[in-house]
Length: 445
Image (cartoon, rainbow, N blue to C red):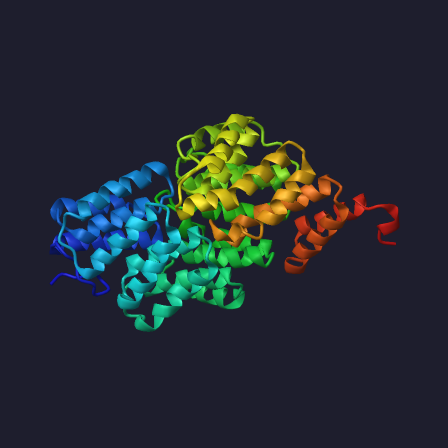
């Protein structure tokens, strides 16, 4: 009986195919190398190797791109013709849900799956990513906490679970434990860029910009290689630190260099690019024609259907490039959609007010923008990304109140931000500008 490194039976495998499979899973664990290529090699050796096909389907379904979702559905057609164990059939049930946009149902099915198969690292990592894409902080933490007692240091992949747990702890505000466990995870596996980024998130949320830059520079050889799928996101984290310190030249250099020099068509990379250009724009910097290239790249992904978090970031680029018809198309797609999937509901309930708020802000309709965004920020954690990524909502909201002369709200929001990050130069500037706009009778003596 052939098993993976964690002891799970692999139907249809051979010794050679399982070796390639284990390498592919390790590459997936650290987001480095070519897991798809390794899985294809395993399938060539053993065409009926169910988990090799299943992991490919997970990788495509988690890409949040229309073409990748279609590929995942095609792979599932192949998988269903194979002989499957109960564990493997459970994976198929999950995948059938996620490719139809039912992210929470898929993640919940994996809750049950992991209770029965606590050492299925593919299910744990895929579930963790589903929790991330639906912005469920508690599940990011507790999915891993539920199974950790079933693991030990001598089981391959244990440190990977620590890195995922660190990120869940950070997203639930347990910053001390998150940093401690994240640092332990990268000490055990220096190439674990997810654990590395969990520590970077802690520093971002605590306003430790100098520490963040030092952390990124000191460990750069471990996360910045060309075969690292997560390198752009980590460069984005370093950029946020420089931006908070007012170091715009460094931010532009990183955008034009490692963030966008390869013109990546990967959705997660383009999300980071859009978010960074928008933050630069909010900070009063002219980003030139950078919007045009990025907007063109979004054309193959922004469909108003697959993953609304991506569409919202595409809208940032479309607004910057003056392509307002594409913005209207996405708005119309959400308004007219008759789909009943969770992803479609995200579009109608969450993405639509975000898109409308950002569009109003771009047009200089600041009071309207504030109206859309003030409500949207309370529902935005129903889908997509991390606290650090969603902070762009609050940043745009407070900038709208400052520019629109909504002084009371501007001061209130600035104080809210300063309560969390009191040393942030950006946050201090919000309060200073809000108070400058205040009527003379309300200005501090």
